[in-house]
Image (cartoon, rainbow, N blue to C red; front, side):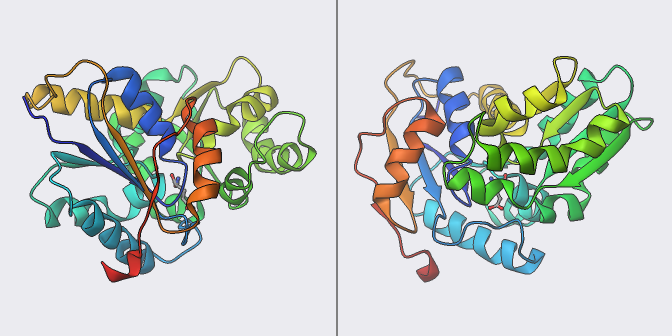
Length: 271
Ligand code: DGL
C-alpha cells in the first residue's frame, strides 16, 4: 500500500479526461494535476521543445512526494516517455501502449484510424505499438492540429458549426477508407467524442487514449501493491501555468464534476 499521491500532467486541460477515469477506478487516490496552460498546444512543436517542457512539468510535480506520474498527454507519451522514465526513480506511465493494445483488440477488419497531434503522428509511436500487437493491421493516421485549440476554447459541442466542419475535413479520409476502429490519440479528443461518433457512425469503435492510460496506470499500481488504503474521498490538487479562473470553469466540464478547490499558479519556466 502506498498513500502518496499520483502526479498527472498534460499540456493543458486534456489530461483531465484521464483524471476523470482515474477517479472512477480509484476514488481513494490523491491526485496532483499540472496543466501547462501557458504553453499549450505542445503538438505543433518540435520533439526537443516537447521534451524540454515535459521535463519541467515533471520537475514541478516531483516537488511533491509522489508514487507515480501519469503522462496524460498523447504528445508527451509519444515523444518523451522513454526519456522521462529513464530519468525518474518512480514509475512514469503513458497513454500510447494501452491505447494501441485496445485498438488492436477492438478491430475486426484490421483497419485502424488514428487521430492525434502533429508531433504524435510524426513520431510513429502509435503505429509501432499497434504493429507490435498486430503486425497485419493497417493504420491510417491523420494529424488534427486545430482540435486542441478549439477544445481549449470550449468549441467541442455537437451543433457547433466550426468544430463540425473541421472534424468532417479531418475524418473524411478515415471514413472513406472504412476504418472500424478509431484511436483518439490525444487526451483532449474525448471531449469531441459526440462530434466524432456522429460523423464516423455507430459501427466505428472509438478508443480513448486517456481512459486506456488511466486503466493501465490503475493496473500497474495494483500489481505493484501501491494503491492507497483509502477507497473514497481522494484529495485533488490542481496547478496551471496560466490564468486559474479560466481553468476552473472548463475543468469542471472536462471532469464532469465541479472544481471547487483553489487552483495554484506555477511559473513553470523556473523548473
Ligand atoms: N492532450 C495533449 C495530447 O494528448 C494535447 C497536446 C497539445 O497540447 O497539442 O496530445
